[in-house]
Structures are given as C-alpha cells and as structure tokens.
Length: 312
Image (cartoon, rainbow, N blue to C red; front, side, top):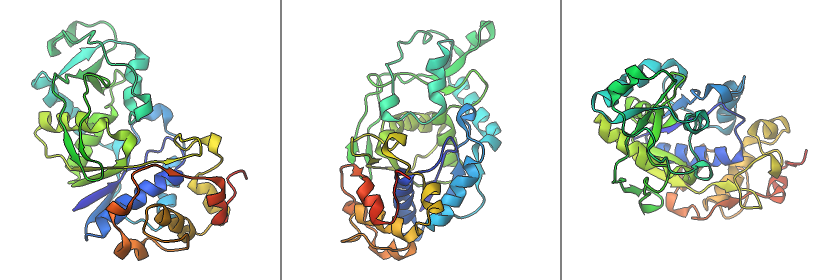
C-alpha cells in the first residue's frame, strides 16, 4: 500500500487541499501503508516563488508526514522523455501544431470546469515521422481512439467518461519541450510504486486518459479514489472570492492545526462535532465510506468556529 501527496506550487495550499491531503494520508496510514511526497512543478509559467517550501510547511503543520525523499518533477525530465519516445515508437502520439492556448492548457491538471471543447482532430492524420518536416513549433498529442476505459473508483464506484465527448485526443508533451500533466503523473506514479491515488473528483476526467497511458506504456495503474471537493457557499471551488482560506494564513493567524483537522474530520463524518484532534488520532476513526458524497460547503461561520476570520 503506497499513497501519495502531490502538491503543485502554482499557488498557496488552501483548506480544500488540506481535506484531500488528509483523506489520502489517512487512507494509506490507516492500513499501514507508505506515503510519498511529490512536488508537481512542471507548469513553470505558473509556479510561484516560495510556494513549494510553503506547501511543505503546510503539510508539516497539519501533521501529515511522508516516507523517503521528496520527488520533484522538474528534476525528472529524462524519465518523461523516455516515456514519450516509447509512445512515439508505438505511433500512439502525433505532432500537433494547434494553437498555443489549446496546448498550454495541458500543462496543469485539467479540472472539470476547464476541460474545454473536444479536440477536432486537426493534426490527427500525421505520423511521428512527419515531425521532421514541420517548420512551426508542435506538441505531441495522444491518440484516444474510440474506446474510453471505465474504472472502479474507490469512492464513486463504477465510473466512465467518454473521452470522444470530453476533450478528445490530449497533449502529453508541450511545444516548449516539457511534459504535460497527464504523462508526467503517470510516469511518476508508476516509478514511485503508487498503489492508490486519492484526489478531488474534479479530476475524474483525467483518469481514463491516464489509464490509456498506463496501457500504452505497459505499466500497472493504481487504484483511483476521487473525493468531493470543498466549495464556497456559491457551490464553486474555493477561491479568493470566498475570502482567505490559505493554510499559511490560518497558521499566521495562530489557528492550531488540530482545530482545522477537527473541522475537516467533522466534515468527513469521523467526528460528531467540531473539536480539536490531531491527524494521528484520526487513524482508528478513518472510514472512507463515512465521507459524504456531496461537496463540503465551507462557510465563514465554520472557520470562525475554529478561531479564524477569512475576511481578515
């Protein structure tokens, strides 16, 4: 049993991130499993200075530890390039000269609300060898084909996303010469021996793409568990419009970590009321099936109950 925490230093970690990390950590640790940590920093234009160190501080503050060395994606580029070459050798990818904005969306994890239109197959008639004759920058796009793999989600049950209707052929390598999210995360999870991926359910559409890559690369996929997000009162993912919910701000305001952990544990159904508790103390209480199937609505009043005012 190997789980993972994989913060992206493209911005500050917030309460929503903390809830998903807590579930992932408890899922592994409650079964005596290992937890590895990876910094997903290949989205270089959006990486914020100091955000990686802040993410580590946030995890330590929450009491979520990890095993072994920290993997940093920007230091693992040869692994991704090797995977790309294997996909090229099998003609599973083709060079794509479509717009930069279309290609750049592939740098980060494509959350459900950012999926965009289905790729129309403009460049799909190309073969790998055609790349040598192109005079304009190009990315590498994976051929999805007609079938999208279904999967058994550890939280949602049987799940199926038809990629011919959601995104279509997807970018695995950007024209800038760096891997896109989908390829990097598959290579890393396989290399690190990850057996369970716990993440937000806005990433459900990424799973069939990653399963196709696992198959194409001859790798064994992990089990996938997609849990509901933390949202604001308007039902949308946490953002600045909901006030300051950054973990660093809670820390600076003097909120004890066990107070936030208690709130999150209550939101997951492990506590009957909001009260301070440490992550380690939740190990005997953890049950994935206790987590409500609907998003957790975080309000200013709930944050005030643990001694924090998101309005500042």
